[in-house]
Image (tube, rainbow, N blue to C red):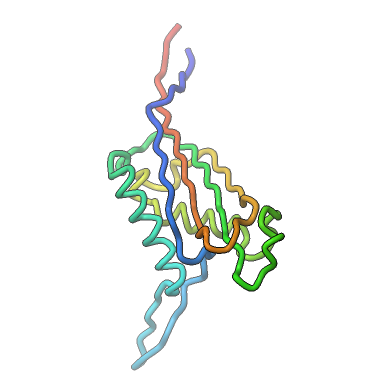
Length: 153
């Protein structure tokens, strides 16, 4: 008796993002004795861009998927206009941290690319070398979906 895992499908999307940000902490304001919790604007805009790109390129085919999911995210940031052109191609070792960017992407795709991020069993995030100014910021997302079947021998 054993479990057999097989690929159910794959999906890929590329999002053009105005600014790459990591997942920011929720903020709170207190007015009239009532606390209001909200997501900071930069995180909200980032997540909306990721969701929009996924919907346009993949749709909601995998929204209710409850099997195992492998997610790979590649982050490409363009150089600031003030940076020397020769810096294009250098490793991106500046903020935001790749793990915080991954968290924002996974939260954005929750309920859209999979039923819940608890179904993610493998994740990989990589910051690509810096792109020349004017080429734009990009998030490339690749998901592989797996199903499991139990086989009696």
